[in-house]
Image (cartoon, rainbow, N blue to C red):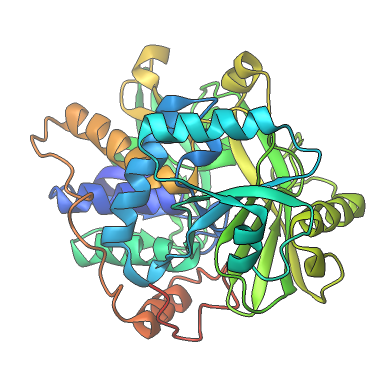
Length: 411
């Protein structure tokens, strides 16, 4: 007999787990299925930066405001899923000073706290910062550990009645006219799930899942390389203060730092080539800010896939402009009980989840509002317990594998 649920969420990254949590807290019967472990797609393969909004301030005010709001919320609710490091935007000799001025002015206008430092002050805060540093500004960036974050969301959803299935790939979707009538799930589930509403939260794979329902969601997967190298003692996140480009972020992780990233469109998020020259370029560009990392011993390298929405990318002209999220109500496409949530950033996952949960509740006539901005995630004062949950949900990604499992209190 088929399983039945009010809402089926497909995709167990931060957004999908966040949707399941949001709905469960509203009393909705929700089931989540993920083809691998929780957070195993884009979320667990990021550079782990909790944006302050400064990266987007001069280009996309709304996106920057969203990041700032969610940054503040996550600091309140996420405990040991977050490491409060602060951040620096670094202007090197040859970088456009007008860009620095525009970013600082935009941050101040939005309300992102900034403080300008001259080169000597910046090097005092960050030993080994490049001698070519002319000035820098502080911003409230932080580090986010996605494996813990995804596991905490999934655990809270389950604690409030949700069903969470890992290693449960969707193999087919059946429709009766304008209604999804069943979702065939293999792996650990191996049955058909019927749901009053289906949310496609599969990120870069959203087009593939939508296609199973006869829908067209045009995605543009985009790869980026990250590498972790040995380097002890970096406190703030370092951002190069220039137009976004390869190798412009250095993220501190204890006795390692994560260097990122590149931006290359690919055709298939499951089957794409990689290029060693991107690794070398990332090292060199990050080394321009922090010279010792260019030759530091490599610990691990991974490639992440950004879930970019193709129409938005085409309209915006590609890299350099903030990427927002899009909630696609497929009632507009003739399928009344399905939606897809695409685009966005890890920093704004909770906001994306709330928007998708609102739409599902509207369809179900559930009169309950999101409470996830105010309710602290569970177990976030107990890093060892969080790390046990990561293992339970098979959610370890490369971003934070040097931290998770150590039981470190990093909040």
